Image 1 (cartoon, one colour):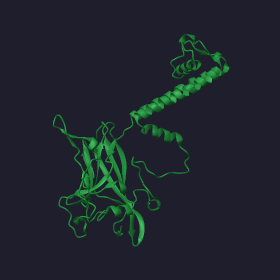
Image 2 (cartoon, rainbow, N blue to C red):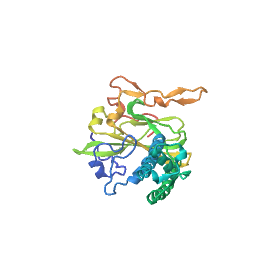
Image 3 (cartoon, rainbow, N blue to C red):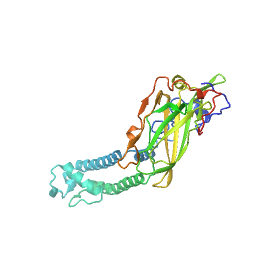
Image 4 (cartoon, helix red, strand yellow):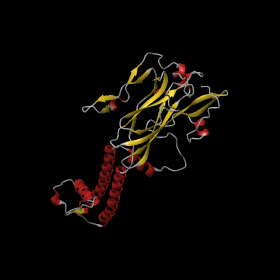
Length: 335
């Protein structure tokens, strides 16, 4: 793409050197950055903590129970390895398997619920008891802390349309994508910033630049249903005269940053997303997402978020007249 230097590109904080040297995607589909930092060590504990906060509830409970059972299983094996005389008093439990008796003893000790009539015999077995009685409450407190952190962590669960689309808009074309809040909690005062990263040819040199894309509207006060975010492609747009081939040749990526006020915890939250050039559809438009409700109130069907209606070939793959340098801006266009 050719571009004059009068339209100064940005860098979004990446830095010009990083933007020029980097290849591939800047953001994953889940909003996580693709950049890496070396020289900080493995940071396994911090990464495990962040993963525990971000994972789904079924996965969280599965991992918690799995880890606790594994630890108790290891202690049970340690008791069994000391012989039958290491644990006594478990005859009344009705457990013939030595491992199950040791496992029951370990769980009671680990959770501080008590071991009943069972007790350890011998110095090695009692040292195991001391170690487990200290480790158990410590790990349970840690698991409870993770649970509380997940429950009290403000978050915004936005669902983005799987693809963006170049669709007809106001007599021309527009880059569009849809978002919807899938969390039961309400958010308000949404602010959206959309940026374009791609390669351009400036003064005969091919370089990668970042441009902010002006939106039809970049904020909404209330967000009860969904929002179709639109960048009108006009004569002033970095995407003017763009085609599927030029978008692919420029290795384009559209970065999306959404900030909002989360009302449950009364704080600002963010969500990020990106669309690569091969995740942008052409000659199509979003299908209606509205649904009929039993009480005649306005409703949307989130399952229709990604649905599109196919248009005639060439509808949006060819530049529109509004993208010419001398074309007037459409009346009422909000930039």
